[in-house]
Image (tube, rainbow, N blue to C red; front, side, top):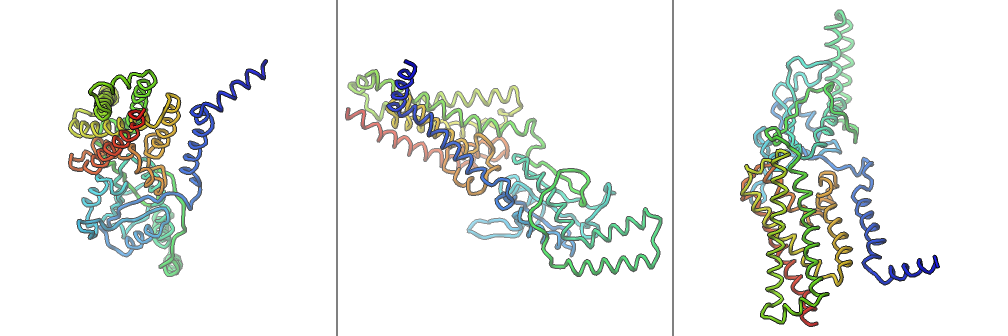
Length: 430
C-alpha cells in the first residue's frame, strides 16, 4: 500500500506540469542564474573594474607618475574626459566637474590630486597638515571606496618607491639622531638609482587593500550624495524590494482572470457589450491603482520609520510609481494570459520574477555584478524602475532626468498589454 500511494503521487506529478516545473526546473534555472552571476568572483581576472574620475590639480612630475600608474592598474578604469552632446569629449578640468559626474552617476568615485602633492606624496605616521588626496564617493556602492583606498596605497608604493625611500631617509634623519654627510650621500645615490630603474616601469597587477588610517598617502573620503541624508541606504532597499514585490502582487492579482475562465464568468462577461480589450483595460486600471497604493504605503512607511524623506520627492515619486505600476500590471496580465491554470501561473511567475529580480537589482545591488550581467539586467523592469527611484531619492535629480526610465517603462507597458491582448484571443475563440 505504501508503494501504491507513492506511485499515485508520482503519476500526479508527471501530469501536473506546473508542479514539475516548481520541483525541478525553477531550482535549476535559479541556480544557473546565480552561478553565472558569481562565477569566478574570487578570480582576479574576472573582478569588476572600478570607474574613477581623476583630476590632477598638482600637475607635477610625481603626480603625473601617480596618475599614470592608476591608469595601468587593472582593477581601475580611470576617466579623465567627459562626454558632450554630439559625441564629443572634453577633459575633466576641475573638482567641480568631477563631483558633477559622481552626482549624476557617471562614475562611483572621483579622485582629486591637490596642489603640492608632488612635493610630499608619501607619509610615514600621522599626517602633519600636508596635501591630502580627496575621494568623492557615491556610497550607493559602499564597496568601491574601500577597495579604491587599498588600490591607492598599493599604487603609491609601487609607482613611487624612490619617493618613499627619500621620505624614509628624511624621517630617519629627523628622528634617528641625524645622519652624517657621507651617509646622506650614499643613501641619495641609492635613491637616484632606484628612481632610474622605476621610471616607466609598470606596477604589479591586481591587489586591493583595507580601509584604514595608516596608509602611505593621506586620503579623505567624502560622501557627496549621502552626507545630507538621514538614512542613505534606505532608498536603495525601498526601490529594489518595492519593485520585486509589486511584480509578485501584480502576477497574483492577474490570476483572477484565470479564475474567471475556470468558473465560466469570463464567458458571461463577454456575452454582454464588454469587449476583451475593455475587460483587459479595466483590469489594467485596477491592478495599476492597487500597485500605486502599495508603493505609496511602502514609501510612507519608509519615511515614518526609516527617514526616507518622501515629502521632499513627491513629484518624482509619483511619476516613477505610476509608470512602474503600469508596467508591472501589464506584466501580470501577460503571465495570466500565458497560463492555463493557477499552478502554471505560480510556476511561471516565480521563475520569471525571481530571475528578473536577480538580474535587475532587486535582490542585491547591481554594482556586485559584472558589467556584462549588468547590461543583461537592462532588459528587466526592475533595473529601470530602480534606476528611476534612485535618481529621485538618492541623486535628487529633476523630473526631466527621469525621461529614459519613464520612456522604457511606458513602452514596456504598451508592448506587454498588446501581448496580453493577443494571447487572450484564445478565450474569445473558445
